[in-house]
Length: 107
Image 1 (spheres, rainbow, N blue to C red):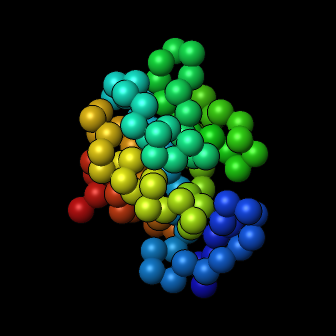
Image 2: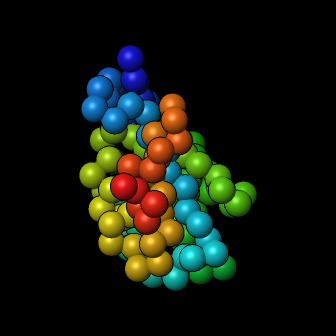
Image 3: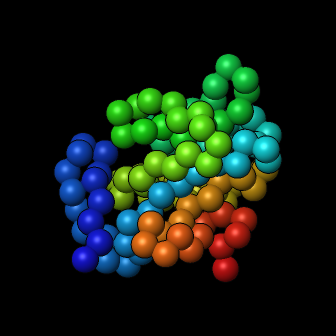
């Protein structure tokens, strides 16, 4: 069974996709900020002008390839961020098999 925490810290079941995580490739980030507009709970622009993901505790994760869980309550916003990103740098993948479900490498 796949479970995830929603924005309020409660665990809910996501049968369709399983647990998802998101990461940003800063080498491709244009700093447009669309992701932070769609899902400010998950994405934030840093002083370097690039977007990063945030932890569940709202901490900016600046390590290359850092991932954060996608809260079920924000799945639509995170998906739309990946679709609308002009740099095609947002990657959403399943935790279990690391298959990208939204983003430039999604099939």
